[in-house]
Image (cartoon, rainbow, N blue to C red):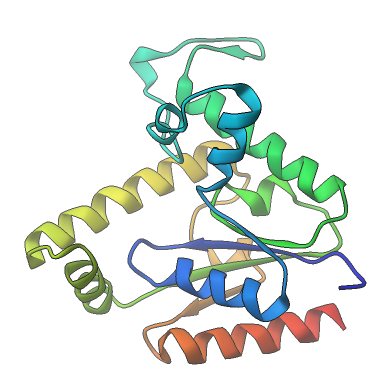
Length: 197
């Protein structure tokens, strides 16, 4: 790819956004980053990846943490900053990639090749997807979706200049329940290809 392209994908839990992000990365032939970046960070910092995963994309616990100037004892904040630095390094190197979550649309804001996408879905379809994927009852799937989206929203709004899911903050927002994962990917590929011409 001649020009650097960075696709930042935020998503509602159960929307299929992660799967769409992987398909876009494969279609463009560029690297794909998600929670797996914690494996690289754990190796680099000589830490256990399981320790980092506990704090990945989680809001900071207000009563269990303190901040003094630039210093914090919040593991949620420390892990978030490690990931933000990782993304900045990848972007600074000129690499093109797709990144899921991690407030990338804010962390990498202002870069010429950045395209930010938000993927949402109809409630019933998200519930069905989570029921099927994790073999849960409908009620458990609803609770899982609510919990994950609540954490994502808190995490995002803590670290970003815009509000999670606010359409004014992204280049494009799309409900993949209307077309399904494959057709939504096609629509987004058209948008991306037009943007990078």
